Amino acid sequence: MHRSAALLVAVGLVLGGCNGKEGDTSTDRDVDLGGPADALVLPDLSDIDKQAAVLEAMDIVLSVRGSTVWAGHERAFERRFDGCPDVYVGAPEDSDLDEDDRARGQGMSWSDFCASPGGLYYRGWEHWITRARTTGDVSDGSTGRVQEASRSLTGNAVVGDDQDVRYEFRGEASDTVYVVQAGDYRRETWSSQLVATVNGTDTLEPASSLTPGGYRADLYVAVQTGDVQRVESRGDVYMFEDRIQGRFDSVSLSLEFIGELGAGPDDCTAEPRGWIGLRDENAWWLDIVFQPAADDDATDSFDDPDYSACDGCGTAYLRGVEQTVELGEVCLDLSAIWSSVGLAAPDPDTYIDSHRDLTGSLE
Image 1: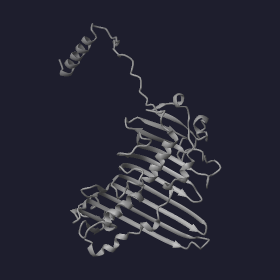
Image 2: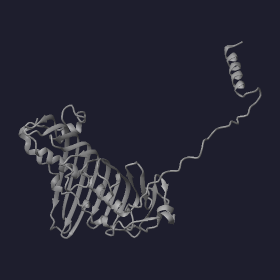
Image 3: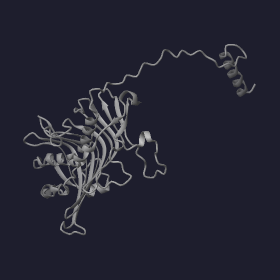
């Protein structure tokens, strides 16, 4: 007999034996499914002020931005001692940017593992690029003054002493600002992209910061103020120590707010588009979904009145389960967002690199 034929016979005998008796082709089996699944435990949110929680979360989101990190970077760098840390034009040697032609030929950096006579240590490296330009004059009613600036910071650095961590930055931060002013007219536009771990008292001053314990973030924020009111934000923030309403350690969101100034006839100013989620320390999420956010290329309108009404209300979910019965609609007045100090654009003059006067010590 051919080997393949013998193999087929053997397989047939084995499969036939598995049926229990010859010729039985039934596939019925008794399966023990066990008892019913345990009821999903849902957290008690009766003590949570949901409006205050969302506004607090938005204030935190607006504070997690490139300008905050940049201020800490400058404070830490200003404390340097001559030769600690070493300063370079372009990216530092043997850093993650050493193979990047753009970074190697532009900007400035420091790289070292040293301590000053006062005990302040610098460990790691940072590289930054800044640009700033001003044209025109405020008194010119036709074009006015235009200020444009951008900067980027990349690093893996810790600065501190035996008392505290002064500055910790691991990741990437970039931001831009565009300010137009002509007479009484003024418009500010700024955006920030932050993917980093941030900590230290030089960046997050304990007396004034909303997140003095530090955070890890992957967050984009874009803001327009002046004759237009618009806020867009998407991403995540995890706070190491601080808690919203004493309970939530993380924010995740994709939201767009439109204010009364500059709003179009079809814009809804009573509520944002998108959703926001707050996570408690048990990793249980409270998600509030407002008007659905549509893609710019979408051709079909979302006309479900239960979800698209401009009424300031959202649908709440706990652990992914809709809570319309338990919590009802979550109706919030979020107009206070427009008075938040976090909306203010960074000063374009701060984008001018003040470290260029270190040319005498550059490597």
